[in-house]
Amino acid sequence: MPEIKATPQLRLVHETDIKDKVVLIRVDHNVVKKGEIKDSSRIEASLGTLFNIISRGGRPILMTHIGRPRDKKTGKINCLPDRSIDPVVAYLEKRLRIKIEIPAFTIHPEIGISTIDSSIQKSIQRLREYKIGAIYLPNVRWFQGEETDGPARTRFARQLANLAGIFVNDAFGSWQPHVSTFDITKFLPSYAGFLLEEEIKNLEKVLNPARPLLAIVAGAKYDTKIGPLKELYQRVDHLILGGIMYNTFLCAKYGVDIAGVPEEDIDLVSELVRLDKEKSKIVELPLLVESEDLGERKEGKTKTIAVKNFRKGDRYKYILDVDPDSFHEKPILDIINSAKTILVNAVMGLAPHFPDGSKSLYKAVDGNSSALKLYGGGDTLQELKNLCPGVYLKGLDNPDCYYFTGGGTVLKALEEGSPFKIKPVERLLKR
Image (cartoon, rainbow, N blue to C red; front, side, top):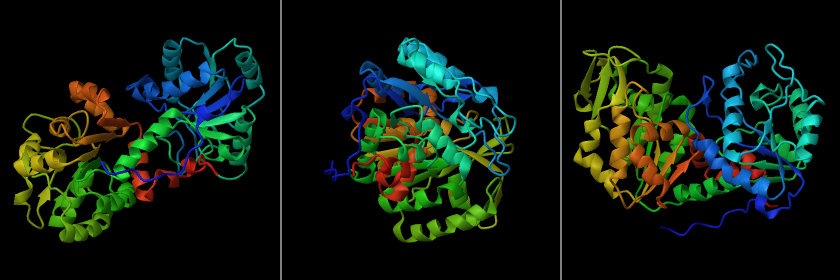
């Protein structure tokens, strides 16, 4: 393992006195889908910070986002019950054995919560008097100013700051500079939580890896990953692509047409194709699963196709998975087994109906017992846990395996060349 370069120092929560102080904590508990918690690992990852703050006499007010309730085109905020933080609060009350109160703010149709009204002061008083153990604000993206600009944004930042004496950011997965991750740091002394600190330490192992470095990345759209993928390509020794991202690459390289791949994305990926002609870092998965339908896997409606048979002008239906035999091919296994660092941010097939490619990938990566393995992203971890529970559990106790809580943040840090250039993290540096 190469020596990790010196990094800027974060202001850390355990370095400051928090006794009897109200502490505003931004966590990433974005784990609710259709009103239920699908994977509690992000909540569990934050418990170290919460236990520390409570045990040292801090009085916590928590906030997280759930989903994307704001329509970017219209600005309308849909405060639907299945995007509330109620399931998270119920889970935390059982884990922490404390009473957590959710303030009942007025929710306006289309604009969400316009203000933090004075009713919260009664909750804060109960918090100070130890009558409750914590306050959890409603879905922070329900507040009108969280993702907008202008007076509403400034007002929301000031209202949040008036609730507490200290701000702690422990939301590694929330890298966007919104009010609850960025603007709030202008008004309160701000610190990193234990999870954020740990994630950044492990990011250094990707930025300064033991080589060869193999990255495995899959995604539904290429256009949202252009910057990170270009930077990642420069850093890796080998790159394996999956999902529509891989389909787009194949369209550009071989001149084929694959259903569901946007023409504009093919134009964007052409630069990567040209670059790879010189450096040959992208490892092609030779066998794919073509489906006549987009959705459930149906008997007689899917077949395996080989990339070696692609000819310019060929048209294919939906390619929804990598055939698991791709990861049994010797050239692919040799690259996986020779890697010293492996970054996995990938679900290879259309979940949940096409799991075979992902399962085969995770088992192949697990077969390399000497590499440092870093898994990134909620979707990746959920698939790993569902498809290969033994591999997932083994990784929890393996010092050479780490599970990032935010795959998008990993890619953003790679794009910037440093986690300390991500705006919410930059605000936590010692000056």
